[in-house]
Image (cartoon, rainbow, N blue to C red):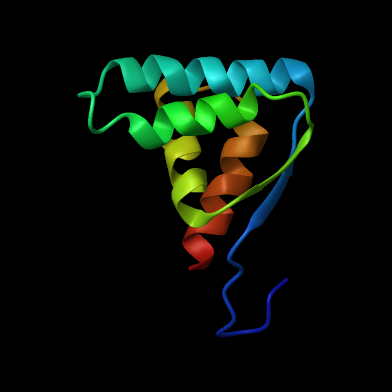
Amino acid sequence: MSPVGERREWLEVRLDQAHRRTAAESIEAFAAMLDEGENTSFLRLARLLRVGRDEFLLDTDQAHDLLTSLDESSRLSTLRARLRAFIDEG
């Protein structure tokens, strides 16, 4: 837990290949509903999730984008809870 008044700037997330794929698919589906200029950060995050590593550091904007797309798809409830807590912390 962070001391009062101190805000974490990064959230460490560990996802196996299946969860990374699920998250990337959710992001891409959400991004497809947006205009081209609005979907850039979502598509960048989807590419990040499709790389071969399991551990990620997400900043607040990335966490928000991921949470938004996962809320839309109702997938990965445990990850959604962690993302929401991280965002609400700030």
